[in-house]
Image (tube, rainbow, N blue to C red; front, side):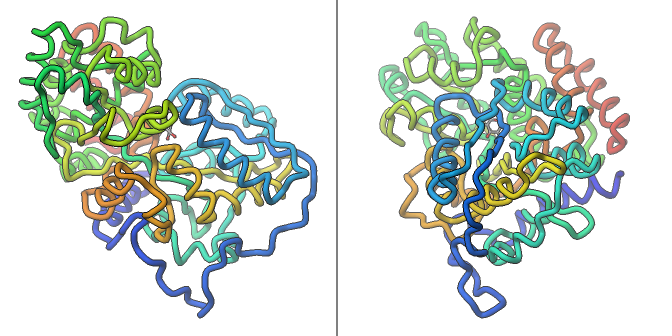
Amino acid sequence: MFGKRFLFVMTVMLLAAQVFTGCAAPAPAPSGGQAAPAGGEAAAPASGGKLEVFSWWTSGGEAAALQALFDAYSAQYPDVEIINATVAGGGGSAARGVLQTRLAGGDVPDTWQVHPGFELIGQYVEPGYVEPVTDLYEAEGWNDVVPEALRTMMTKDGEIYQVTVGVHRGNGFWYNKQLLADNGIEVGDTLSVDEFIAIADQLKAAGVTPLCVGDSGIWATAQLFENTLLGAIGPEAYNGLWDGSTRFDDPGVKQAMETYGKMLEYQNEDHSALSWDQAVKKLMEGGCAFNSMGDWAYGEFVNAGLTDNVEFGWVSHPGTAGSFMIVADGFPIGKGSANPENARNWLKVIGSKEAQEAFNPLKGSICARTDCDRAKFGVYHNWSMDSFANDALVPSVVHGSAAPADFQQALNDAVTVFVVDKNVDAFANALVAAAQSSGFGK
Ligand code: BGC
């Protein structure tokens, strides 16, 4: 087990080391001497029937982006009825449990949303719930346009099990430009923790809520901690958490816990009544200044008709400039599902350049392929693509890639306790114990 966990961390570090240019780079020449086809295999004849797509994409921005994928699919397979099986709850907090129950009961969706890394391999590949799609990568020319290290995160024993449609940047820090301008505040290209605290104190004194949090799902505040942790200890030590070379009671980790506790003092009073997207909405409406969130928040801004760098701005979560927290989304084919051929065609569509260029501008993520056209993306996306190409890449534990599900759950539990008691030592000890019991902590 240890070896496998280490492999994922190494994979992400390898991603960082590769010349990995997001959507910017021209596709390398395909090995077969042929241009990678947009649609690879000839489109299968419309077979009719149904396609059940299971996800947690229910917020305004998420639903709009998902619809772009459905539109791309329906354009090629108009006779297939799409069943949009969603379970609300950001981060998949509710969906994953529902899915496990369905899978265990043999009620297998044709395809479902999944993060690469531990979530894909541990929860779906190892129990035998998904089909390999390695041949699709060959037929569609994806081995030439999907970075090898990303493919490695979706691979077990030489077989690939997922098609990734987009790569989110988890460590975003979004802000309401007008509200800051009204208070005489301008945010530069980066923001340190100390700079944020100075701004937050100024805002608080002026009666403005500095930080919007929507943690009706505990994952959202766990992510605030995850981002703060990355900022406090940096990407190398952060990656070391997942192979035991950094301990969770390291002084840097404890400092992150102190800072996280401090940040909670700046949050909105109604944080636990709001979902993540309601918190973004509150920011848009001027109810608070900043929000720490993955760039699915971008999807909410665009869905509300707002423009990059006009109504909203962004910077890396305080202290995390130079790092890109990977939160990638993809889909597999459910083994034993009712419509595997339709699911296979779904994967062919969402793996295509065209579908990824339609989906990602609405979702906030960047393409999982290296050949998307930058001109089809706005200011934020181009910034994120540069970050992906140049920054240290780190996996998210809150979104399933860095550590197994039991540790993810233990982190949520420890955060739930910490937000009430603010006991740093107890928080650190809980995570040390959880890492040991998950097999990677020392
Ligand atoms: C997913 C995103 C989604 C976010 C909020 C993350 O786990 O990767 O696609 O928008 O959760 O629901």
